[in-house]
Length: 320
Image (cartoon, rainbow, N blue to C red; front, top):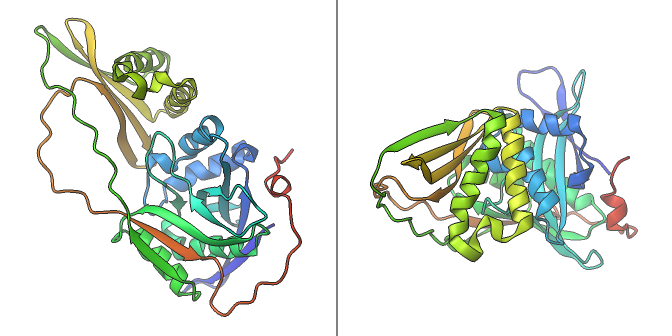
């Protein structure tokens, strides 16, 4: 089922119509995934964790029995539809009861992320909420964790809720536990730094990283085969498009520290680090606290028409 929203743009002769659909992550075909990649260059808050090569890999390997979907918001274009929003969601497991959709907190990221077109943010979010309201899943509200209160995304969500009479509530979110820094002591010897970008050599560099990370024991990536697989697949997919690299620090030929870099659009980040910390990190002001936002999917004063029950598998069926 598609839900449409028409946006009148000032100074333009026509209206922009947005439509939304709820899809199973595994049902997305390559043109749709490529449209998602293109969206990352226009994202309101770009993040490698909102990139399809990250989010879809996590959904494939680390869903852990959760009911997942991707809410896609499209604008019909002259030649092909333009993707304006992609929201990875965790849906209620029991569809017979009224429930809550949640922006999925991605494994190996620790945060919930979505890709929203910066030029259409409020309209994209209104279209997404309207679609959730009209779906047969009996959804009551949408939980959006990990928001920065002063972010452009939080402002857009507030505008989308306020403009349609939806109730928006914010609550403080517990801070994520800090990871203890690795020892700063380097063994005696000659130190060298290598940045590996070549796709053929990056695979070995990733394995060096995993060996270092394995020293964390039960918390390491290699401790869980599915997690290690997801990690390898993500780095391979980003490397294939030239947006991943691995820093290796050697001491007398032995790798003692490593870092994985990922990039999407114009944004890049250090995804993971392992081994020794090579420099004392300067003290910084604490990061602003993040909040959880809960917005109702029902518009104020709207009357929801009765709907027939629809099997979730049918709604999220894989498209042949």
